[in-house]
Image (cartoon, rainbow, N blue to C red; front, side, top):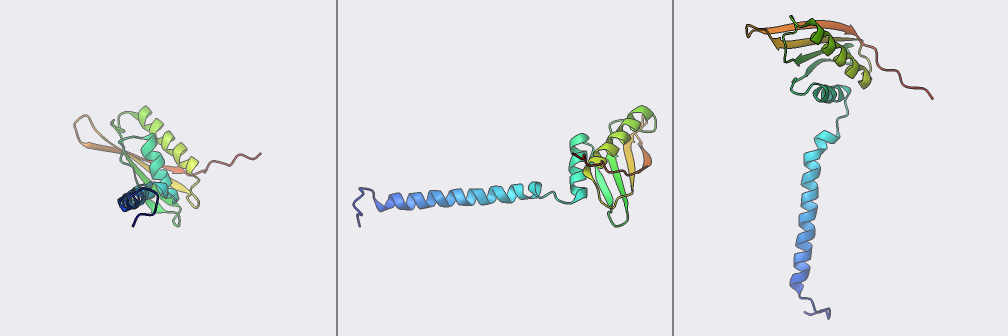
Length: 139
């Protein structure tokens, strides 16, 4: 059973087993990374952008492109009813993030900031914004 190369058949079995392990590892890695690679819907991209812009905010998006109205809720680390400057800045940042996503068919965004009051009770502020997608730069 010697092929003249001086190597035993065990070498071939080990080589095939190692190649099989590499294929299995690649398949598992692809299955783990596939959900992150396929963020294709506009609301999924918006959700990912909000999570990046507002870490720990647990953004939630409801509504659809067919209604033209999206509702966005964010947890904030301050009382949005008492800290108007911070709330305004958060509304402005949400609007800029949404505009950059170019959400087709969306006309309005309702943004709700949810925080905790000094007494420890939930406090929230909502604002409805007219949606204007960012214009593409012409050459």
